[in-house]
Amino acid sequence: MKLKKLLIPFFKSIPKLLLFQLVSSFLVQLCAWGISELSNLILGTAGKTSVSSGDFAFVFTHWQGYAVIALMIVIVLLYVAADVNALIIYCGELIDGREPRIFKCLWKGLLALKKYLDPRGAVVIIYLTLISPIIGLGFSISLTKNFYIPKFISSVIYGNPLMTVGMYVLFGFFFLVGIVYCFILHGTLLDGKRMKEASVESRRLIKSNWKNFLFEMFRFLLIMLAFYLLIAVVFLVVPQLVFRLIPGGKESLSLLRIILLMIGAAMLLILNMLGSSFIVIKIDLLRRRYKSSGEWEYKPAPKKRHPAVIAGAALLLCVVLVMSLLLWFSYENNILIFENKVGITAHRAGGTEAPENTVKGIETAASLGASGAEIDIQRTSDGYYIVNHDDSFKRVAGVDKKPSELTLEEVRRLRVDGEPVPTLEETLEASRDRLRLFVELKGETADSKMADDAVRIIKEAGMEKQTVLISLKYDVLEYIERKYPEIETGYLAFFSFGKMEKMPFDYFALEEEIATSEAIDNIRSRGKKVMVWTVNDEEDIEEFLQSNADMIITDEVSLSLKLKKELGSRKPEELLIEYIRKLFI
Image (tube, rainbow, N blue to C red; front, side, top):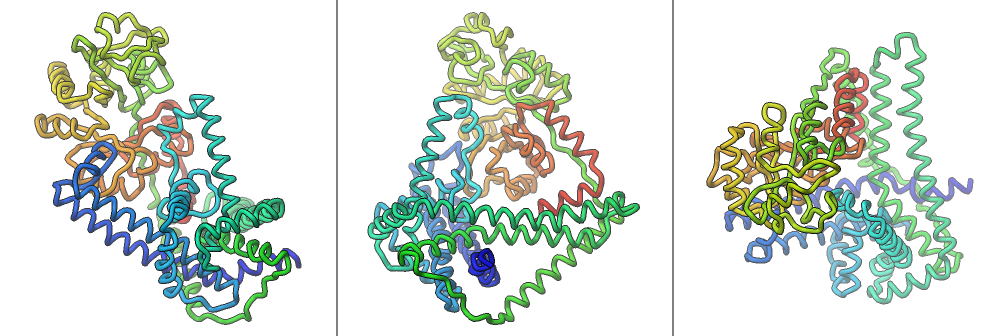
């Protein structure tokens, strides 16, 4: 009975919260789309299709850049107004037993943005949009809910014990800040307090009730997890086990089984959608109890029938049934076929299979069956091009000097795990007729001269059709495209705003976070190719091997090839279950 009483505010709110989420998400995304299109028009006046990591300086040197920044801030504020302000106001009215109006709450949420016009408000927005998604605490705006530290940065952090400890200390600090000030928005939006007053009240309430708060939130999260597991077991696990016990069930996939899988996946999706709303309600319930010294008690409003909610539930069930029929038909007629065409490109010549950026790495990648290899070139003090990733040779060869401070003869005396540092010419020869070589123009010497020299060396080797010049530097690649259109180019990016697919390059190497299905499809629809970097975790490798990307760049070549083989040998049943998982979860 106590558990039932605890869950009443959440269960009674589900239909209205779902309706609010659908309406608010649609409206905000529609507004954000319109603002994004306006941004693209403004960029077009400067002859640009997007702003990305390689040409970000544009933002601070042209009026169009400042205009785009302003419009991006507007988009963020719209999401704060809907995903945070309006949601808290809407949930507050539900707890009060009133009948909230979606559009009225959205309007109040928009007007409440003026409450953020002080330093505390700016900090709150930064916390909601950036810090909360990274540390995984509380709720955030849907625009940045999947935001995380790019893996090419986190790998450097985790590779340094001191930096790792510092990062966790910082995360711990943000965690404590999030707890201490968890009531600030409720006090501001529901009680009409100023940010300063609400922050003082939040500190006071948490100081007096922190043990109970931590217990209640921990119990709440456990209950949420239990519901996730219950749905997964009832709809996803049990049907699998039951059908395996039925004669012939293991080899067949009935329509009933597909319907159960689809319903379970849809319910998990709904719970995931409502996660932030439930946290908002829980925090408000605790705040009200603490303010009244434990005397306040939630009294649910009388039950009411909502035709729109009933119609929505019926429509959702119909959609699930129709999709189940389509999937069942595809399964029964062997339409589900997985063709894994994603290539494996070894990072820094051979990944972890051999000393990085060496001829041995190239040879190892080729012998394992990789389709390509990526290397980094820099210029020596006497004008030669050698292969090295870092600014100096300290990490790989123990010499704290830049390539530009050494002659070719001095570089040749260095060893990377016993292997010599190769020249561009040597890596070209090692990859000839074996691998497609992606040559990154790297570091402070990556300029037009490097571009000219690299093209000359590639042409002298007769490797134009087997080599792609790639770089983080937009202007260098643009120079190659303009002067040497016969040479393929690849743009490395870890963030982008606008229509990246309209850039004049042949390949786009996207960092994992921005390698969304939409981004990949947009680029490939223009007849260009997509690489995803640097994909090393098993789960991520599996994800991108099943994407529409053309290749992944990875340090784990053997693991990637093994997973590719396993994915290619999956049965139709496994393909269908994976399709449902990707569709809903």
